[in-house]
Length: 370
Image 1 (tube, one colour):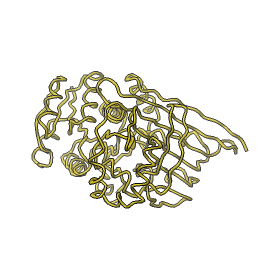
Image 2 (spheres, one colour; image 1 turned 120 degrees about the horizontal axis):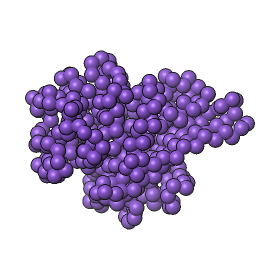
Image 3 (cartoon, one colour; image 1 turned 180 degrees about the horizontal axis):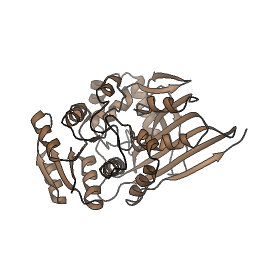
Image 4 (cartoon, helix red, strand yellow; image 1 turned 60 degrees about the vertical axis):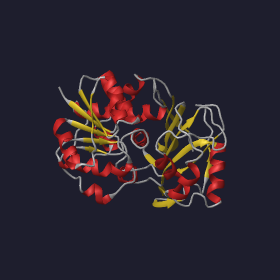
């Protein structure tokens, strides 16, 4: 029986554990530096131990004892874990590695066991949906990813709550977003443009802004679709939240990570009752006529997990299962959207797995004409 090692047992790691325990027969081993996280994992019934994966010997033992590793560690150590497990000869799936595409890192992973990077909700699931939507068109002109996790009951002064780490949350507002605009890869200030976001999925007044989540799509979309002109990710927030954040930005209070942490750490509380919107669309042409292909979905917190943890953790767990069952094959770095192009049936299996957890998506293909 295959064994899976889950490195990092925070909210995302716990969601991975939940899915694998309830939907597979693998031996599940968990690893975390926090004794509390380890105890929570043990109560679910898995083998869990306290370990610091920054220790190369510990990482070597984790690779030795598992057929596949899923990494759900913070961004600051993700590269170390991925490269270490790969060097020790085991396949690894990571939630955040290659969040920002790095050619130098990619060149280190051209062979050996499979590495599936940036494999959570966004990026991850959205990469597959983007490639699938674009593949429905004969000519692809634009791919847009619109995603966002938000509190169901937004409260002043910020109308937002922390759903993942403070640093990663702040990063969305201070790190330039890399997008494709008019056929060129460019960086834009994430709060320089704020767009209205009307949706039928949830009642409310929403807006969105550019964020740095295209990941490997910056490379894979232009590679496969030569007519592509624009591609971007935008993050959806309650409109009042973005109005406040834009004001803070204009006042110079978000100029750096340290400035932003000083301001926001005092007023941003941790949330648990959230919902997540996903809209991925491709625009282009079919038979010479304008067409739009769209995947849309909304999910809510349930079962003790935030919606963000559900979408992120369950997606990673499903893809790990596909790798172990040989449905996803390859060597070295394999963006999940490339795995989809090699075997398009995996999208059905991913959506089926998510649907088993109450997460549904709607698909539409509309030919506008003209």
